[in-house]
Image 1 (cartoon, rainbow, N blue to C red):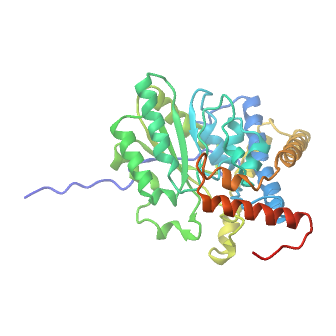
Image 2: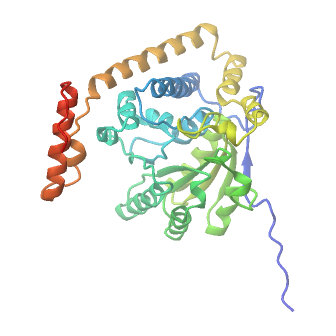
Image 3: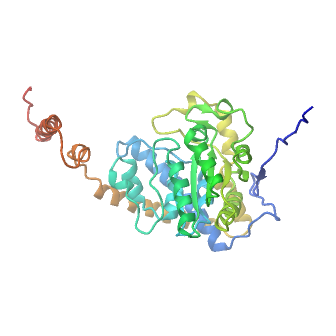
Length: 369
């Protein structure tokens, strides 16, 4: 008669350091220095301020569709905080806060979200991949880059993030498996913000948490309070150090909440209740961190005002630079489809389109074709 083996339900660690009032667990507090704490705080404020500005610009017709990150600032900044410049980051499309931390310019991100292909150009000297709109498809690329680091004998680590919706894609599962088999130096961050567009997490999977999948793939897993910046910094640093020292991959589930719409084309009031949003608003990552900084004497009213002013000015200058760069060229939609031999029928369409566009811009009546 075979024996039945009972697997404990809780096979992953869970981590939270700051409570909702900003009080830290003294034993778990990473004890970051004052300058680092203020740098992280300013990065979180900048991410949220840019978020608000981009929504306004989109509503005014100055920007294409946009995926707000309000409420996920701690999950994102905390994830990339411990990366070195020589490490790699493969972002999801809601990661502009982390991208700015890594060195992406504000005008570059605005170009990206307004549909200019130049926006996807990688900044010089930054080991990042451009994000992809196709859900989860950047995760295998990140795994491949991590495997390449092992082949090349570097000590570089790769970190990639994705949403709870992407965790149901085969690309993500295949990446976790390859990374574990090849002991790749990569950290997987699942930002579980509660909804895959409109699908709630409990309708997407039967398991308690995404982190519980980690042992099945053969890697450590951790479930972290994604609205707690100190917990995110601590968890990702541990995982990055493990990967760098040859310990292989880690899967971290950052439990957070998308406080705004999925994108500016979405209406979240259709599929989630106001009381749920209110409950998570009380766990706002910036408010919690502010309380911690105020209580520890790192932040005061004057510093807070100065940071807000500096961030506003930085984003204003970025927007002005974006407006100077954002010069549409209607011909590009044809030229970048075929680099050399454009079919005759497409050439005819191109010429007709450009003729009509020129006539419209000149205010002339169009001749029927």
